Each structure stands twice: as C-alpha cells, then as structure tokens.
Amino acid sequence: MSKDNQKNVSRRDFIWKIGIGSVAVSIGGASVLTVRYMKPNVLFEIPTRFRMGMPEDFSPGSVTTDSKRKVFIIRQKTGAFFAISSVCSHLGCITQYRSIDEKISCPCHGSIFNLSGEVLSGPAPKPLQRVLIEINDRGELIVDTAITVSDDYLLRV
Amino acid sequence: MRRLYQIIISSEFWKSIFRTRNFSTNLGRSMVIFNNLFLHILPVKTKRETLHFGATMYLGFISFSLFVILTLTGIYLMLYYHPSVPQAYWDMKDLQFAVSNGVFIRNLHRWSAHAMVAAVFLHMLRVFYAGAYKTPKQFNWGMGIMLLILTLLLSYTGYLLPWDQLAYWAVSVGANMADAAPVIGPKLKFLLLGGNNIGENTLIRFYVLHCVILPLAAAGLIGVHFWRVRKDGGVTPLFRKRSEQIPDNE
Image (tube, rainbow over all chains, first blue to last red; front, side, top):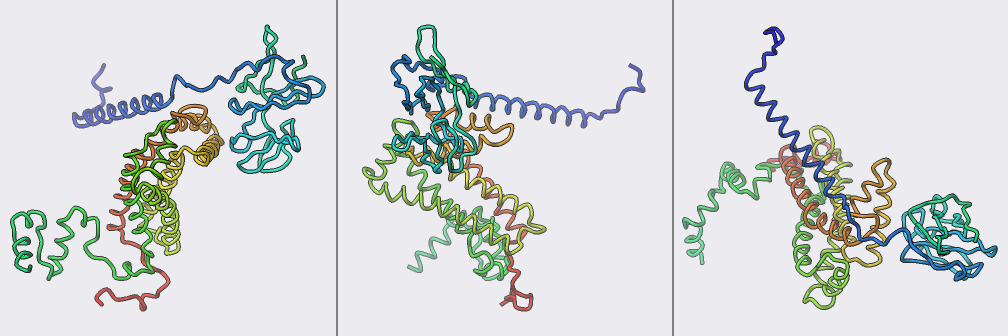
C-alpha cells in the first residue's frame, strides 16, 4: 500500500468510529434477539386439523356447530359436505347458527350470513371462509381450518 | 407549638433536607424551586395568564393526577391478581366480593382509566384550540401524541385482564384490527397475542405490557413532557387581546 492511498484517520476519529460501530452492532443484535425471543416456537393451541367422525353420522340437510374448533359442518340435502369457518370475516368474533331462520349471525356487530357463508347484512366485508373437508383412508371426515378452499368447494361422498 | 415548629425548622435534620427558608425575596422563592427534586420540574417564574383556569382548564394536571391514582390502585390490584387463565377471572371476582375494600380499589382503577382517556383527549383539544402546538412547542405536541397513544394502549391492554367475555372479544376485535395492517399486520398480531389465538401467552403479555412496559414508558415521556412545558412555556389563551390580559405584576 502506497502512502498516497492512506486516509488520514486521526486517533480520535478511529476510536469514535469503533465506539459507534460497536454500539450499533450491540443494539442491532439485541433487537434481532428480542424480536426472535418474542416469537414463541411451541404453542399449546388446539390443532387446526382434526377428525369429525363418519359421514353417515351427519344427516342430509344438517348444520353441525363445533364452537371449540370454530367451524360449521354443513351437509346439504344432496348429501354433499362443506365446512365453513365460524370466525366472522369482520373482526374475528365467533358466529352462531340460528336454527329458527337457518341463518348464521355474529353477536359482536350483527353481521348475518346464509348457510353458504354469504353476507346477507351487517358490516362483514366478505363471506365466511370455506375450509378444507376431506375423507381419510379410513372413511372418516377430516377438517383443516388452516387450509382455505374456494366458495364452490363441495365434498361428495 | 410555635416553639416546637421553630425547633424543628432550625434543626440540622430539617435544614439538610430543605435548604432554603427565605421566602421574602424573589431569589429565596426561586431557590426553593431549584433545590427540590420534585419542585424543580416547575418553572421558577410563570405567567399569571397561564395559571388562569381558562388557559388549560387544568386538563393536563387532571390527566397526571389520574395517572398517579391508576399507578397506586394498580399496585394494590396486583397484590391479588394472578395473570393466568384459570385464576384471572376468579381473582377479579374475589377483588369484588371477598377482598376488603377490593371493589372500591377496582372501581377506582376502572373509572380513573376511563376518565384518563377522556381527560387526555380533552387536554389535547384544549392545547389544539389554544394554538399551543405551534413553534416552539411542536416537540411537546409530538410528546403529547405519544402519551395519547400510550394512554390508549394502557387502556387496551388493561381491558383483557378481567378475562371475561367482554375482555376476550374486545381484544379479539382489537387484534384483528392490527391484523388488517398492510404487510406487518399478521406478524404484529402473532407477536401481540403470542400465538394464533388469545390464550395464556396473550394474558401474560398484556399483563407485562400493562403493568411494567407501558407505565414506565409513560412515566418517562411524562417527565420529558413536563420539562418541555417548563422550558417552552405552557398554554397562553389566544382569545384575549394583549391589552385585556392580566398583567404579570398584578
């Protein structure tokens, strides 16, 4: 290295940069560590994928509510199944099925849905989410509330 | 009685705490303020106009008083409250029905919390309409905004702690509002709740935020806020002409 290329860094400047650099590194490291620490790795939540029993346990034209897992299992009169999340598409309250007029209603802000999950009235911006329902190799119904499906998804058995 | 008073205020012990006793001069009165940790946050001199009720309607003072009440009653409540899912609701009910004066402390805390949100908001309106956010007080207006946000966050985190239906669903709704924020929303919700749903993790997170992190942040910012009022001056009403203002030497 020739002498011309050397930048003239004073001792004070050098110490200042070392100081600022180490403070920046430690603050950065502490921030990354903190955010990572805040994110739990193990959760004791109920699984999103679960068995719902045999298809013949559900009579055609029935609505079954599982409020713990936040899902409605609907069997149409034709025998086809679909599952819709009971989590309101507005702000996440749990909707309830009203057998008296066959509607789904939300207690928080009064949204009303029909049995296909479509919004009839209230502030909900979109239909209730249809979620995956399928048959496993033992012939049982499996629902996964974490997997969303299109609004025309039907399970025929 | 008078002699006892004289003995106390001329004792070494008293003088070691309160150094200034000469209130007869301006200097003496200033020294009282300078030499006291708690008083020195106040300006040594202030405009008579600023102390007039119409200037601030004492809303800042009311907000701070409520903050003090909330801190004290909050400490009382912490002695009986366990932030765990099986315990929280029953502890709240015990405070209402089984603990002596528990219902008084709990109600004082709850009503003061509602009042503080209102007082802080009205304080902000008063400052706004008096034009006290303008130069050189912009920084303190910003501090005030941060304190308003902290007040709302304290209110929101405290809302979950009774662990009843209202608490659960109100926080559900709030967390889903955070979820709707672009890009960072879902991650923010996950960090806030400590999971995908409101549960044990959420309760302890909100408890720590409510009892430690947010009050400390608020206390720090309140200190800066007061210091700036002392340095930049408080609210001076604009609705009076200069000629109608109360003279300082009156």
